[in-house]
Amino acid sequence: MKARAAVSDGKGNFVIEEITLGDPERDEVCVEIRASGVCHTDFDHMKNFGTTFIMGHEGAGVVLQVGPNIAHVKEGDRVLLNWAIPCGSCFQCSRGAENICENKPRLPDERCIFRGEKIVPDFSLGTMSTHTVVPSQAVIRMDVDIPFAPAAILGCGVMTGFGSVVNAARVQTDSTVVVLGTGGVGLSVIQGAVYARARQIIAVDVNPARLRLALEFGATNTILADRKDQGLLDAAMKVKGLTEGRGADYAFECTAVPELGPAPLAMVRNGGTAVGVSGIEQSVEFNMELFEWDKFYINPLYGQCRPSVDFPLLLDLYTRKRLKLDEMVTRIYPLEGLAQAFEDMHAGINAKGVLVMDGS
Image (tube, rainbow, N blue to C red; front, top):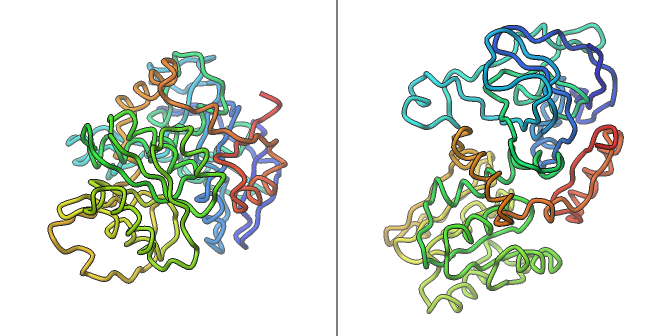
């Protein structure tokens, strides 16, 4: 099968060209992609110099073909894709930690061909393509009425933010929450805090427009941060002023700025919980005094996603108008508009940009 895809060229750039996909084999599914989210991770992965891959890891579409041994989806089903693909039987999966599966299913290298050479799909998905072949465990059937664009963003940013609140931090009713950075992931943290019935949700950002959006998504207070505020320590003092002088119960870092990795520790009270949501992977210098007085710091992956549990919940909340997804998709682009989507993402224009294939 021929498809058009965004392919990282291994030099920090990408091209939109034709790829060839093999038919799905045992435990594999071919999906016609209708929408793919545009994420900072997609851009950052292009820095893996020397590595060529099919880009994209947030996707939704329609099942085109299934291989043998597939029972949970069939041709014509509307589906979303999950990048933390669980095998279902390893040590981590057996203890419910499916997001950190030790034996993640993958496609054989020869399933995808680009310019006559084997090529791998990013995150075993490669959603920035008109079609993809994926392990069957990556496919979640959508039994609710939801457009493809908002469905696509469930597969990473929304799950990461919402799950970090509900699954990882287990935010308690009537608690106080701080959210550092109110892009797509931060807005999903805010929605998770609303779902958990937090009493106070304080949004912190350097972008006034994003703070206004945070209020629409459920924040109760906002703090406009200064880019010169090292470690957001001044913002932390404002947080304490809003929380009876002690700090919040929980603080979530959603900025992806390495220097702000320690910042949520400055926002929480003694015994509070700081959460690194954005997946910072660089070395970061910490002042260990920030940990004093029984503070916790956790760094969950993908909101501790359990696909068979979490995605039906998120889809149900969407249908009951308790999860804002349409409102988060602030602009859509054709596949050929990926460069503009990246430019708008870095400019902070979008809460979430989405590639939509063939006008879907």
